Amino acid sequence: MTKVLNSLVRLDPGNNSLSASNTHSPATTSQPILLKEENTWHDKLGIWIPNDLFPYVTDEPVYTSNRQAKIKGQHYEPGCIYWLNGIRKRKAAHKLAVRQQKEHEAREVKRLAYEEELSTRAKLWGTSSNRIKYREDMCKDLTNFQDHFHKKITPLTDRRSVLQNRLTQGKNVYKTNKQLLQLEQDFGCFNIDYFSVMDDCAPHYRYKGHTSDDTKHLELRPHKRPPIPSTNIDRHNSEVKKLRLDILSPEDSKVFTLP
Image (tube, rainbow, N blue to C red; front, side):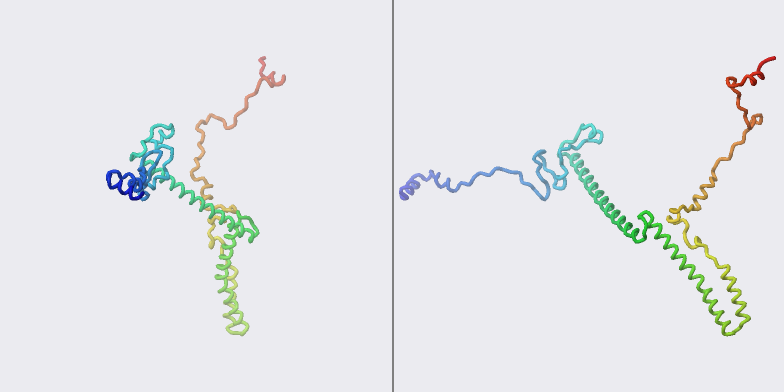
């Protein structure tokens, strides 16, 4: 049988349908090639769109102006340069919104952490979160004032101890008594004003009701207009109310009757 087939092929060399059927490959349909490095094909619009702009292409058209967007009026043809610029603006607006959202979330997390910290500190001080800053700042100022007061008065107390030791030892009694008397006078005059060391314009002093110098100056009202004196010298300062005739008594009405 094989010999017969071979002989037939040799007799009719143009008849090669058998070999063609064995070597023919199926036809391939032409498909658009997606260039992922540059552009992407949009099936609905039928245009190539840059990859960075493709996620921002929606069914919403790109209008020619804000007014046209309000009335849903004229819009650009997809694919033109103005349409692409509108998509780029949409991309920039989206990135701005995402960045602002992240910043807002970061601020919110920071605020909650700060409030939690204030609440913890307030529990240690036995107060509320609203007054914790006031109490801490007041304690800091009192501590600083005590340190300053101690620094100024320590030399006087040390000097007193030295002079008293001299009297105990009997050295230069007259001169030592004179110096000790002068030292006691210095102790009597020793005085440090609290607000000469601390800043009375600090917020924690205003919180308690302390009035700053600027506020006191405003309360004087230096720009208040002076009272305008009356130029009418015939006008009396006190005006007499008019009598109503409908409420007069019979005795009062006799005054107004003619004789």
